[in-house]
Amino acid sequence: MEHAEEMRADAAVHYRGVRKRKWGKWVSEIREPGKKSRIWLGSFESAEMAAVAHDVAALRLKGHDAQLNFPESAEQLPRPRSSDPKDIRSAALEAAARLRCKTTTARAGMSSALERLGNDELGLDSPKMWLDLAEALLLTPPAWNSEVSELEDWEHHGSLWDPFP
Image (spheres, rainbow, N blue to C red):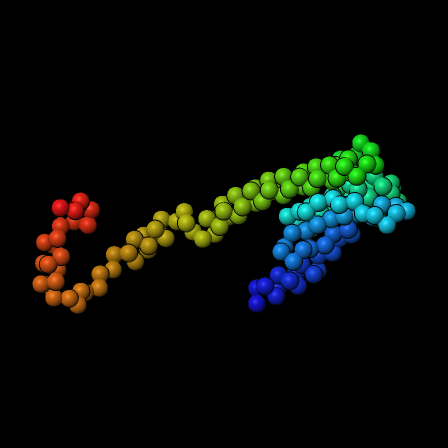
């Protein structure tokens, strides 16, 4: 069931120049203008990283006429030194790495904020909660159904942590 939901969520993600491999990696490539050949931009952890890599290449190859995945961030993208595929790929990978760093930093900040919120809302700072927990742990242990002779046999063997004789 979860796999089917994941497949539907992935199908809803569609960026120009991006596709998902069977094994879960996202890849990006772009066709060179006026040619049948493509420039391989790389394999990425997320669709967004692949999409921003495509944007870098599209800006270099097509200029301001390029149709971008994230037009609002075009000014912040790194620029390739030339139209050479190696330079385009290098700048595309740099853009994807920048996005990855931003995403990782944002997730860390968000999890910290959610942790603080969760502690407050769950009442983990409440003395009453700790008293209730302590009371719940003071239940009487279940009775042993074994005979005393079994317990006495066990005691003759000593501790589990004693070295073998």
